[in-house]
Length: 350
Image (cartoon, rainbow, N blue to C red; front, side):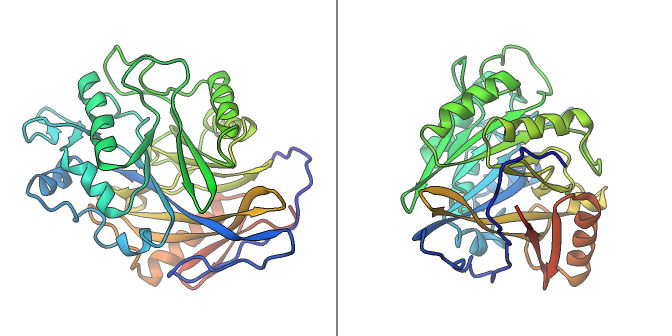
């Protein structure tokens, strides 16, 4: 595993109760405030979920996990579907890989406790520029922040900055590719290393902790390719504290790299892909950041196993939790341990 050679204070990331992250042990340099953040995987509010939303059941997608999400100050997810009014269509009649969520999806996100989403992914242009702009408008009207797209062609894409308890958390998002269409240049944040460095450098002047979303890699693969791994690591080199990967639809490994923590892929969240066992199992990342000695640092983290469906749940069997732990232990360079149904990521002597 690569290292920057910087010295880190010893930190062991410990497990906490589902009801919320407990206070970490605090030395004289720590203040009394922190921010709890949850990161979720791929969320598709089109297809059959979109039909439920059209019938007015806006609580449906996040009904089972909402109580846990609401115990966090900030909840982030990758929004895999555009949000636009297409006359009741939530999946293209001739292309099952082209889908769109109805306008009610923005309220579903808000009601479910989602604070901020990435809109930069391979489905960001499924229904074109008009739907891209409508997605931004619907999210804005619902009070859900976004990052990764722009209605106008831009040089640098706007980040999302969420302030809680006096701590500013910044989000940026990138995708490796877009499935279809032309004319999206400058409106969808394609990963470019030089631009990512500039954007994150600008963001760090305004935010005290940076989370970068990366959408790319190979679907259903156990691990990222060398090229994908290089791009994930480049985001840490650019200044991101946490990098969360999306698109493979299955959970992949975890790595401490330099000053940052990389989750290669969180897997799915609200997504129905019954053909693949690991597309039905995933995890959410629950973390706490705290002001320590004048800077904001990661103070606590845990992974919550998730049973994936159109209505996911954290109420998983021991078998699901066991299999997820064994998979992550095999695929991760970061040291992890199991505690009850949760997974602990240890920082060791960093």
